[in-house]
Length: 131
Image (cartoon, rainbow, N blue to C red; front, top):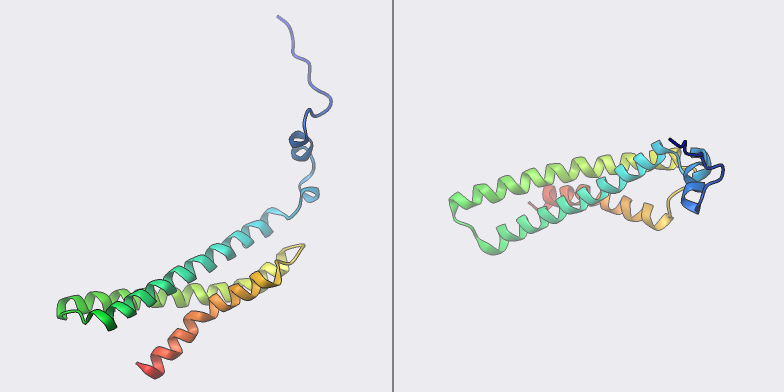
């Protein structure tokens, strides 16, 4: 039986990059994890806020009967609480992303995330004052 020889040099660029230490490739794993979590939190906040908007518009335009009214009010309340929790978490993650990343995220992305995170709080103030 023949023994296989080990290659001394990588064959293609992919093997060259994967054989480098982690610090040379780019961001560290914790910084990538916090960035992905930040982006997913922004997406969850936006989707729950859209759900609040849809449920609120359904309550206003459709004029549901009494048994459907409770369903829409519960759905609106649950989505609103979820959007507030996600929004506060999103706003709290912004300084962590800047702290953990070697290169800060683009300013436009940060401002967009801040607006998305503040949107549920603005919605809450509007609900409080305008019913």
